[in-house]
Image (cartoon, rainbow, N blue to C red; front, side, top):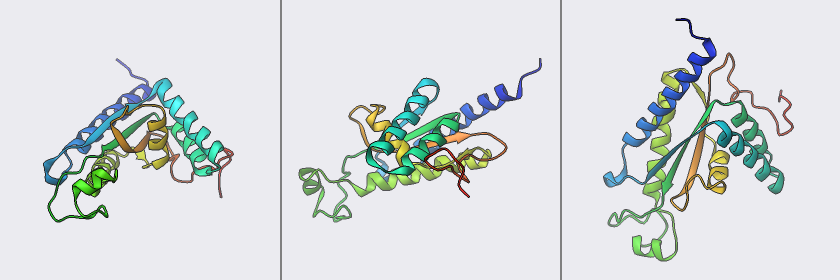
Length: 184
C-alpha cells in the first residue's frame, strides 16, 4: 500500500489534536475539580469559525480577529479549550477580587482557579503539539468566535482556540495582516 503524504499528514494532525485533548484533560486542576470543556473543529465548522472571527473583526474594528481568521483558514483542525466558571470554594482565597466564593457568585465573578486551570491545560496541550512538531498558536479570538457560534452552549464562558497546521512554514509565525497580505 502507498499512502499520499497529505493523507498521512491529515491523519497525523488528527491524532495529535486528540492527544492534545488528553493532555489538557489530565493537566492538574485546583482541588482536583475539572471545569474543562474540549471541542475539536474541522471541515465546515472550521470554515464557519474563521468567517465568524473575520466578522467580529470587521464589526468591531479589531484587526487581529481578521488576521487570526485567516490563520484558522490555513489550519487543518482547531482544538477549543474552555472553562466552565464555577468557584471551587477554596477557603481564604479572594484571588477573584471578592471576599469569598459566595460574593463571587452573587456578583457573577470569575473564579481564578478556573482560569488558571484553563491556562495550565492550554500549556499541556501545546506541549504535545510541540513534541510532535505540529505548528500551533493559542488564539483568544478563536475562542470568542466559538462562543458566538454556540460551540459551548451555556457551559464554557472563557474559551481559547488552538489552530494546528503541518506545512513547510508555520502560518502562525509571520502572520498575515487583516488584508490577507503578508507583513514584513
